[in-house]
Image (tube, rainbow, N blue to C red):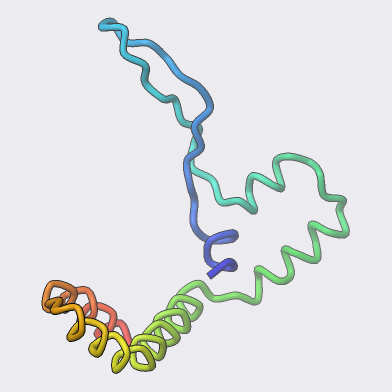
Length: 109
């Protein structure tokens, strides 16, 4: 997860506030960038560190990484199924509301 988040998932960060005509505060965001891009822009790494991390990134396929994450999530769901159903039955809960999410994860498998 951390590889996908740090190297391939851009995020926006709040950089300040502005006031509208009605006096309400509104957040201002910077342009989306990955945590890796933000680290590169900060200038805290030397050239050797940058090249080592860049070499590692070049060997990562984001699509394969996502497939591996989905497979592990499905394994975790399978391992937890019996305990989850027992807890739901003991608490008289209906798990049908979660079924669309589980089905979506199963399709990605």
